[in-house]
Image (cartoon, rainbow, N blue to C red; front, side, top):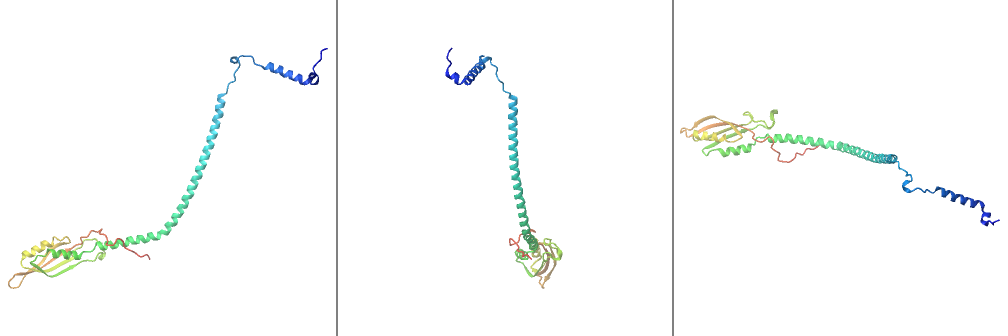
Length: 238
C-alpha cells in the first residue's frame, strides 16, 4: 500500500477545495477566438436621456439662482428709489417757500420792467428838438406833457395820444419859410408826430418877425422788452 503524504492526511478538506477551484477555473476558460466572442453593446439612448436630464436639472438650478439674484437686486434698487423719493419730497417741501418767493420776485420784476419800458424819454425828445431848430427860429416857450406809465389803467407800452403826451411850442421866426423848415425838421424826430401849425401872426409895425405856435404828439419809442438797468429786482419775502 502506497504511503500518502502527511499534508494529505493533515489537511484533507483544504486539498479538496483547492482541487475544486482549479477544476472550476479550468472549465470557465473561454477558448473562442476574440473575433467570434459575443460583444456587449452600450444603450446609447438611455445614456443620452440621462445626460439630458442632468443638463436640464443643472440649467434649471442655474436659472433659479440667477433669477433669485436678479430679484434681490431689483428689490434693493426699489428700496433705494423709494428712499430717494422720500428724500426728494422732503427737499421739495422745504424749497416750496423759496419757489413762492422767486415767483413774487419775477412778477415784481415784470411790473417794474413794464413801467420802465413805458416811460416817455423826455430828455431824448428835448435833445432831438434842440438839434432840428433852425438859427432863424427862437423859442418863447416849450411845454411838454407826458402821461405816467400805466396811468388810467392803460398798458404801460400803449402808444400815447394827443391828450396824453402833447408838445406845444411858442416861437418866433423871420419868415414863413423858416416856420415851414422848422416844422419839416420837427417831423423827422421819431418820437414826434402829428405836427401842425396852430397859429401864425406878424409882430411889430415892420412885420419882420412872425409869431407862431406849433403843436405835436409825443410818443414812446422804447422797445416794450427794454431790460432794466439792474439785472434783478430784489423782493423781500413777507
